[in-house]
Figure 1 (cartoon, helix red, strand yellow):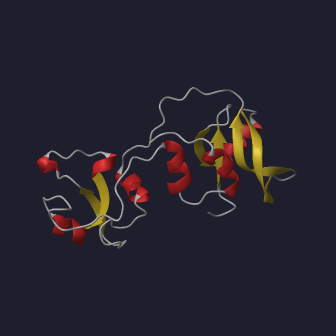
Figure 2 (figure 1 turned 90 degrees about the horizontal axis):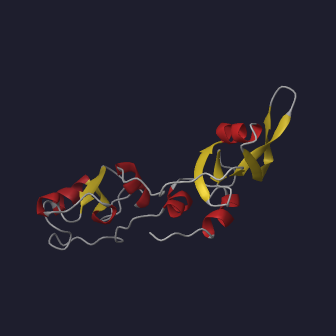
Length: 173
């Protein structure tokens, strides 16, 4: 984790994580009084011609926003993020693609628990078989990440000031 993110964590009025936004967006929410500052980066300031403002790290919305179920969208890039951008068979980070553990031709679905990141070489070796049939072992089983876990573990650099808000709000995957 890196201190000093260029993004801010946005909390709902009840302190549950809602999203991550850019610093300009966070500043605008603060300036329009649609959010309040919870944590700031002491080492940095936002400056205009004649004023200085705190650099937001965590903001809280002033009005509660009803959120529909907040799941992590199943996309190629999100599967790569979950798997650390490395082949789940050999560990390389080159020529990555998606692999269906149970091939689509055998009824396998495109879902979190059936998709893994694989390099083209391992994917070709596996072919139209399951990993067991191809004598390939997964580094770890695939799983569906929940939203808070995804922000905390897979969204790239995060500010350490976010951690108290991301640790305590565990949801089931």
